[in-house]
Image (spheres, rainbow, N blue to C red):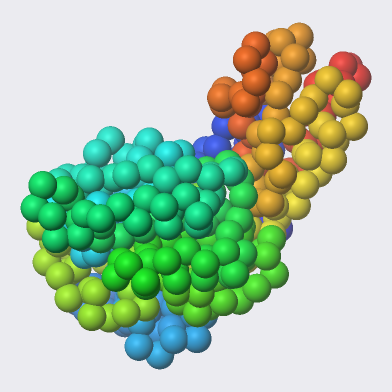
Length: 360
């Protein structure tokens, strides 16, 4: 893993988000090559975009999937869901899901008014029994009620947990039994796949996922995601919805160049493996401090910890950056710490030393 070239980035104690990291040099190089390649057909009818689709087919072991580059995760999620539900439909998701909390109504806008209905469960994961109970209500065909249409899960979750293939399958079986589609927000899919040690296919379409928002921006891209339809029939409206929503890029090759480099030689997994390893180091270091408590088991590149005020203040005074997070106990202050492909072992060690009061 190449260290960041900027000396400030190499020493900063910035654990706010993997979005604060820059772009991987290999992806920047790919963009330069795409610029220098000369004129290419616009709107995605170019060799780079086609190569990305072929790479994704190989990666997911699925010869007929269709994929579409977009620039943001919000666009990926909202456009994907718009193909799965009518305006009077219901999308079931976790209360902490990004589509529920952090996308400013974009799914509702792009679907034309579909309703997001939360289904709870531990560590950001939908509990199958709770989902089944929610879907057991007799509303199908009743004109007074919005109609269940889709389920959306996040991999890894907003609490840093991962769904195993069996857990995804349990939810997909409920979806299938009720005639619903299953969407996966895979903004951190790479981190989940590394942790699980399974193939991308095993935790997506083979477990019943219909549509995937395939993330890259948090894991080394400058700004690129892909919407992957494992069932091509569900993609029938996507190109029109993408254009109408302002996300059909005329120079699509510049999004595709990022995804092409991201997938080349498994860079996406190497970046995620490094981020997960740095989170594991951070977890190990902080777990040795009696004053620190972990909110959730760490399974990817996010760590959720309760810190005494004195420790949090000491870290902030040293220039460390991190976001608050709701605690599960009254009177405690919890925080989210996120590592990235750029995070260095020295940064982790210094953060832990400051938290322990050992830094000079």
